Image 1 (cartoon, rainbow, N blue to C red):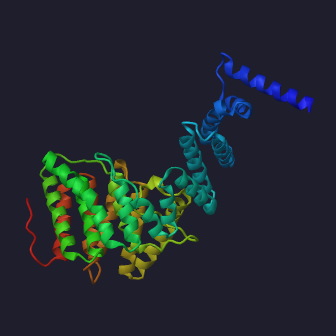
Image 2: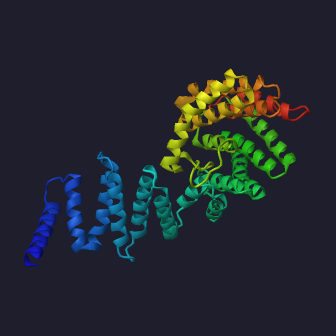
Image 3: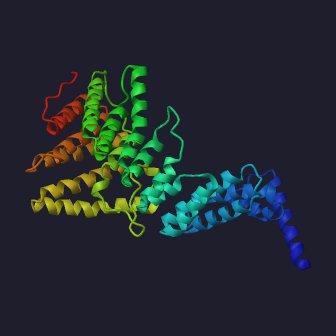
Amino acid sequence: MGNARKYDEDAVLRARVLLLGSGRLDLAEELGAYRVLAEVSPRAYLPKLVGALLLTGYRTTVPGAELRLFAEAVDAARRIEATAVNRVELLRRALGAYERELFTVGRRAEGRAVCEEMYALSGHPRLAHVLAEEGRHREAAEILRRRPAAAPGFPPWDVYEAAAELSAAGLHAEAAEAFARTVGAGRRRAAEKGTPPPDLAWELIHHARLLEDAGRPGEGAAARREALDVVARLAQRDGSGDPMTSLWATLFVLSGRSDEPVATPEAPMPPFGAESLRWSPDVREAYREDIPVLEAEAARLTAAGALPRAYTVHRRLTLRAVHFGHSHGAAPLLRPRFDEGVALARRLEDTASALPQALTDRAMFLVATGRHADAHADLAEALGLMDASPIVTRT
């Protein structure tokens, strides 16, 4: 026992000397010192140990090391005394890194348990995204509806997510009311600045879908007409080239949820309505891996003349193309996909639903890329197909 105690004291002394030295330490040396000192001075060194473990986990190139390092960071963070000012934030950061890595390696049950701990700790909404991925939409909606409304001037992600989960849970009226908040904010910005923001156009289109799902077709039609007026006003502005945004991409990908398989714990699907960075790594990768399968299916269906089904599969491919490449530089690559969708919809014998959808899809893409005049032409045609009455718009 004496030798062991002497060894411990020597290790502590070496660690203190190392940290107090004038030379610059590499991360491995610093981490080793914090591991030793956290055992004898936990109040001072456990927070430093957590930070070093997380940083090492993010930087490591050793296969499998991330999971071990993040697990150790969680253990260290849990050991920080409960009254420490930064304990909750450090534990939340450690749990967040750990659960992401658990999902990456396919350990969903453990990842979900970590998210439950995060939610109990600080009300972090990550659990809602995981529940949504597994088809537990009502539980996800309950978590998301408790959050305060998004602060003015910030992207309305909270509203998007809450409305998406309420809709998926079959609470269509509540979903429409929830989403009305962000539409109202867009209208206020338009009134204040004298010109509407582009996001108001695609938010009105999405609100129209929610209203129609809630059994309020007249209000849905009015929202679509208001969107057309917004696009007409945007077309009056000089210049173009507004960059695509993740807001448009999120709502566009959400619009395809009904054509995707139903999410289950055994076969999770993306948390449609949430920003792509909030998807679990395993779900994002599965969504990507679907692309070659869908491409083969689309080719087979088109060759067989099964055009309605080919159109649906092509749209699912377009949704994925947008999700994985919605940055402004990808616009020239995405445009042909929307053009092909419209061309395919025009070939269908019954274009009553597909063509208005394809035209609206392309119109919102064009708004997102600053091609407002072209967007107006597409949206006007789409609404003309959906409504027999003549459309009067500003030109």
